[in-house]
Image 1 (cartoon, chains in turn purple, blue):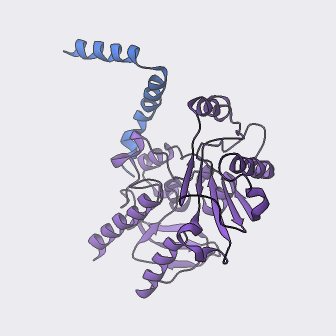
Image 2: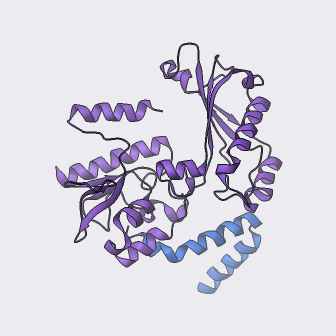
Image 3: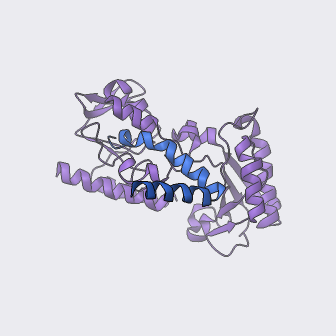
Length: 276
Length: 40
C-alpha cells in the first residue's frame, strides 16, 4: 500500500507541494471560527489559506482545534462518537514465496467459533488466541517491496480486539500475541511459515494510537453505523470551522482504503469549489 | 392510526431476535446525539 501515498506525494510535488515527515502538529490555528494554519510541536507556525486534516475527527476537533474554539453543540457531537475496532497487525518478511493463491486470503471461522470469540473473549475484554483473519501478500502485486526472492505478508485479525485487555496491556502482551498469530498462520494458511520468517513486527492498538494518533487504535477511524454515516458523520468541509477540511476514515465515505482515497477526492472538490 | 403504528412497533419488537433487539437498543442510545452530529 505504500504505492498509494507515494503516488499522491509524487503527483503533489509536480505542483509544488512540500512534504515534511516526522513533524507533529500541536494545534490548528483558529481565530473567529476560521482556520488559518498550524502550530508544530517545536512551536513554529505555518499559516495558510486552509487546513486539511487526515487525522481522526475527534483528534482534529477536540485536540488540535480545542473545545474552546468550537461551538458547544459541535463539542457535544464530536465527543459522542465511538471509535472503530482496534485490530493488531503483524508484518512478516519471508525468505521464500508463500504458497498463496491471491493478494488477499480470508481465513474464516465457523459460526460457533465466531460466537465464542465475541461472547467469551471480546465482550469480556479478553484476547482470543485464534480469530478470523486476513492475510495480505503485498509482494504478489509489487515484488519491488522486498529484496529479490523475498516476500512480505501482512496479517490482520479482523475480529475486534479489546483496546484495554482485562488486567493487562498491549505492551506486555505483544510477544504472546506474535506467537499466537504465527500459530494461526501455521494452522490455517502456511504450515511451514515459521521456518521462513526473516523479520516479524507486531503493531498493537497502543502502537497505532501512539504512532498514527488513532484513538484506542481504531483502524477505521470513527465507528460506522447508521447513526455515524451520511449527514451524521463529520463533514468533509467542516460546518464548525471555516477553511477546515477533513479527509480520511473519520469523514465521508468512511474507513477502508478505497473509501479514504475517495474522501480525498470529495474533499479536493470542495476545496476547488471554495477556493478556485 | 397512531395506536396501530405503536401496536405494530411493539409486535415487531417482540418478534425480533435477541441480537436485533440489542442492535435497536444500541441505535436508540445514539439518537440523542444525532442533532449535535449534524453540526460538525
